[in-house]
Image 1 (cartoon, rainbow over the protein chains, first blue to last red):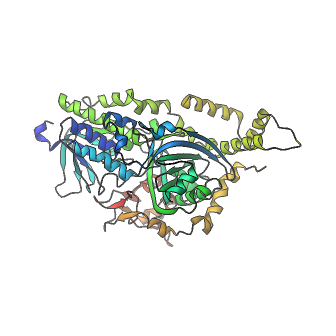
Image 2 (image 1 turned 180 degrees about the horizontal axis):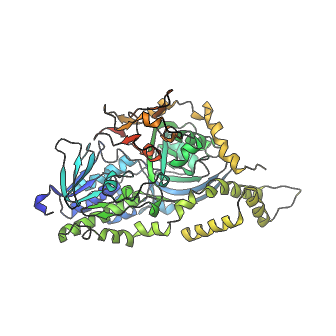
Image 3 (image 1 turned 30 degrees about the horizontal axis):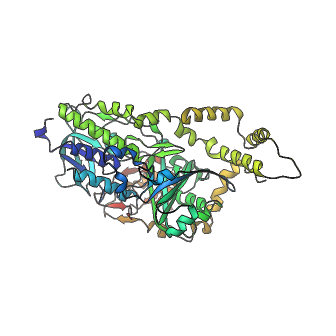
Length: 437
Length: 116
């Protein structure tokens, strides 16, 4: 399509972090950009566990930390392993992360996404809110040339459409970019935002000022494979769980009941008690990484963020907003070049795949391709926490007049008692080593 | 020394969380009232309860975080769209073709998550 025959150069669907960065890059390059957001403001439909790693923004918004609507800077990261009566925590703190250029931050997504979309608007992108895209417009050859919306006379055409329409991405599906959708590849995140006075949060979590804590928890979700989390905001904490959706029915456990059980755990209850529920929220997560990713381009269209299943759910690494921002940025750059070169066919847009492949976006996913399945496996979820906690309990228990048993003997005994086969343990250890090592 | 049998660990939670105390004194309605929904009169998700009559698993009932699927005495299902998080869990876990037709609400409607 030539410029004169389309309404705008670029349509971005979705005002989350992917869409905001795509629109920002394209608008800064001088293209006419419309960003369509179905909520009343960008970020209004968005919810996550709670930590954003904005390093990639160094390229787009220098010194973003001076203005980003951050709750707290994460200076303390804990990984917790729970059984019904035990807890083992690995706790790391870094003072450096509390200072520029920082690392991770807790933030409310409606705040953060709204702020980021504001930069796209300042760069010249036109943001149209309260507008739901209902489908694609394609030419006779099948190339995407625009979108339909639920506004009267709501069709809009463009040379490139960038679909940042989130985890359910009906646009990527309509364009045939997903071969199939499998419920096994999704987890449901449910979260409670609990109000507590700042001093109480500081005291309970051992932090001061704007420093904050990120706690990831395994073994906290009953029979439903998943994980738990607690994050500190300034005057609230977020506590929640991520759950394999195909296990909820099988276990007959409801999401909010699993949060309730987590909050009652002896290691968690003192952290969350008296917190007044400010908001209960839920969102789907594309959990399976490379196993579920769609084709990233088709003629006239690119897919970014959760719509492209770019969430990284790899146990100790849980990231999504940074992958969304980066893929949106690369999609924007690709659109700019393709439009400048006059070729927005699949070939003209093919460079997007290369940009994703050459950067952390797909490099991290390739490296950690086995991690999501390992982390959600039955052994990691239900057997290893018990085994490891029992080993540690026996190591630290003073059982006089008996002498201390050797660690190797404890390991062997607890492995057997937990019902873990040696070769499974070795195999999982090797998979973990190859992924994380 | 407390030892937890893996099978027991798996089954330990349900009974415990079914106890009213586990709900923190908050009813489900009170829980849902903390989230903002700009309700559109037209349902964005339509459930054909007659299709659900032949479903034995009914995973949507348990999996929906907003608890919007309610079984009826005649073996069907009723659905209320008003407090929907628009997450997509229901259509993904549903294994009955044609039972759930799922769309986003009209622009500007549906869930609006809170800002500070």
